Structures are given as structure tokens and as C-alpha cells.
Image (cartoon, rainbow, N blue to C red):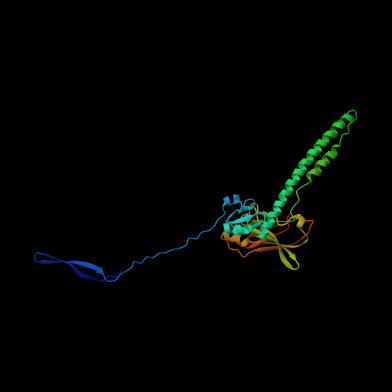
Length: 278
């Protein structure tokens, strides 16, 4: 620290009897300003997903969290993995793809409600009509012998009812971590189709808690052709601080309209296996 030079100024001379007194006043010869060091350092803030967003009007009905990835969010309408940031999610609601998907979802929901209403009203009408017919038949056929239905036909009818199963999706996949023997959840998978020599994007989604995803395409929109599944495995290994030689994995296969194609992926940092499942 620098020393300041000072000068003494004689003022206020006072005479008391025969003795002179001088009162010294010390004045600074150079003005010094204190140096203030301000160290400002910005804090790093990492946005994470908040479940409360799901109840907000802009996000209600389509926003979900991603299991195992707190910085990611998922759109159930578009089947898309998003950044868990408020501004990013609001921008996503303005995209054409999201608006079309929301309209399609609303139309499907309305159609299901109408079908259920028509089914209920139809069942009530049929019930009333059947009651009237049964009353007439009882009056007319009280004395007629009733025919018994063979047991074999009854068993056959029950078997035919049990054969009616939900329709399988045309394309589905499941990813397993062979090093741990567990399914991989939260992995982003994209589907492409080869059209006129170019890979065209179809849809994408993330695997669930069992490592599966099957909502790539509806059966009504599915056509024959060559398809490709693209797995973003680098994020999975990076999150677990594991080295891998695969930034991504792609599986190309031919698909027909009358078949269901389930493509499992058995994954490790330095190898993978795939096959046609059932």
C-alpha cells in the first residue's frame, strides 16, 4: 500500500501569556480512491422437469416426464423427446407438427366418445326390442319343445371368442442392456422409410420402463417397403459414464403389410445383437 505525503499547515495561532502555540492540521497532498474489486461470476443453472407443468393449460394432456432423464420431457401427441425447459416446451406447442397431432388426438377422442354413445344407445334399443320379442315368443311357444344346443357348438363359440385378440402394431422394438440384464428405458428411437432412394422420417419415440416402443405407425397407414430403426445409444452410455464405440445404431429391414415386425436389440458398450422377434 502506497504511503501518502502530508504537509503541515500552521493555523490558529494562539497567544497565551508569552508562549505561542501552533495547532497542526494534516491535509492529504494527493487524493486516493479506494479500489473496490467486484468479482461477479454467473451461476450455472440446469433446468429439470417439473411434474407441476403437466397441469398447466398449455401442457395439459400431452406433457410427460422421461424416466431416468430429469432434463428431458416427452410429448405424447408427437411421440417426441424434448428439452425440459419452459421456453422450449412453449415453442414446441407452436409447431405445425404438434398442432396437427393435437387435432388428430382430439378427433380420435371425439370419435371414440361418439362410438361409445352409439353403442350404448344401440344396446338399449336392442334390449328393448329383444324384450318385446321374447315376451311374444313365450306366449306363442309355451307348448313347443325347446331345442337344446349341442355342447360341442357351445365350446366352439367360446373358443372363437377367445381367439379375438388386439391387433399387433406393424413395427415395434425392445432394447435390453446385456451387461445388466435389464431393459433400457428412456432411449430415443426413430423410424425411417426408404422412398425414392432417400430415407424419409416416419416417427420417433422413447422406450418405456420395459424397454419397449410400438407406436411408430398405425396399421391403416402402414405400407410395404424397406424401413430403418435409428437408436441414439450415445446418450444412454454418456449418462452412465460408460465408453462406447457406437454413437448410434441403425437396423434396416424389409416389412410387409400382413406381418407384424418386432425388432429386439440386445445392447452393450462394444457390441449388439438383433433379430426378428414375435
